[in-house]
Image (tube, rainbow, N blue to C red; front, side, top):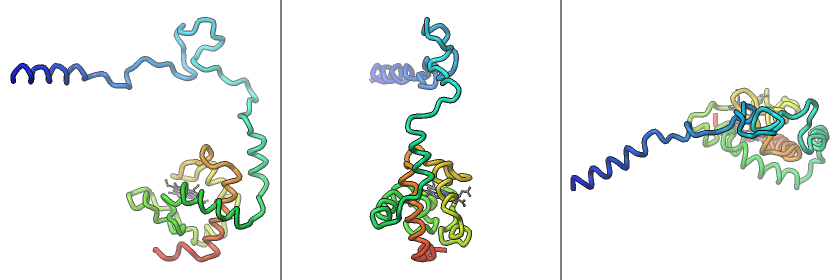
Length: 167
Ligand code: HEC
């Protein structure tokens, strides 16, 4: 029995100090320390030349600048996306009582709040694309066309007077 205990202790202690924080790694734009001889830059990745734009940036900018026609298909899409990305905090009715808020995340205003009702579409779009205060940006998850669909659905919630149910 003693031998078994000793063995367990040795195995357990051998695992100490092997934190993944301490492994060798390169920093994206940091020094490569000669690990990649012949590589034109100093780091693991090359710094993009000045004026570089990301792929499809122009198409995304155009989609953001052009409100799509509001029709049932857009609202259904908006509802689906809203319930995936926004409802966890803003709640299914927009009251600001989503499950994450009930577990302690700061509570956003209800979309039925006069300030939110009067907010122009640009402000809602910007909150999704750039984030707002403690809310992070959804630009990597919600494409511009879907941002418009979500905004249309939020307007529908506001018109329906939703978000009043819970204080
Ligand atoms: C993790 C929680 C969380 C998620 C998910 C979330 N929000 Fe928010 N949102 C907040 C909080 C908190 C605030 C208030 C932030 C503050 O005042 O600092 C806020 C504020 C806003 C505002 C108010 C902006 C203004 O100008 O007053 C809008 C609009 C908004 N969110 C829309 C959305 C939409 C649309 C989605 C889904 C794509 C979404 N939010 C997802 C937490 C969230």
